[in-house]
Image (cartoon, rainbow, N blue to C red; front, side, top):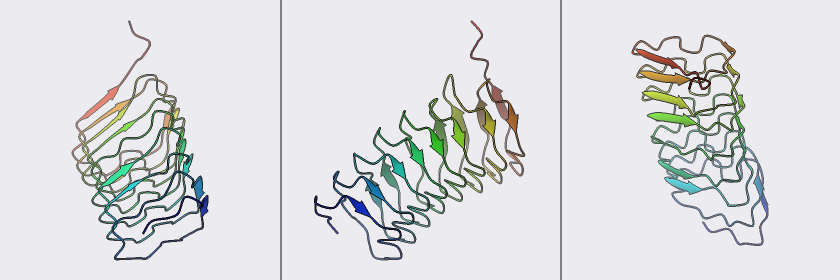
Length: 193
């Protein structure tokens, strides 16, 4: 499917439940789209977020089980609730350096193996990596702005071995329950010389 460059927005669930959709090109003229855009598009393999998008809405790629590559441009500042939930083929993702918010259960049950959270992120939703059984390491970059690890942030991440927590985290809520292989927790102190 190719969308003409006269289109500027796409509605909720516009391409949802198209099990044979493998590839789609959306032009940079698209500045916004509604939630669940590709929900249950189980054959979609890769996607590039249009260059003028500032937000990846909730449930955008939920249960896109073949999705293995997503390119996110630097203008994206927010990723919504369950945006990549159930994306079991998604092993890695590069989050943009200007990202400010990651919604709850954003990567729930995805295939992520590692995650690096940029220092611009200040808002994390609950359960962002809940049930990511392939996730082995999580790193917050130096001088992270996150102040809280909400409930179930890494709940049931059975392969999680290492996490680096920034020094400015003030509170954590049952963030690592049922992570039997977690052996290394590094609490960074960015103020040390």
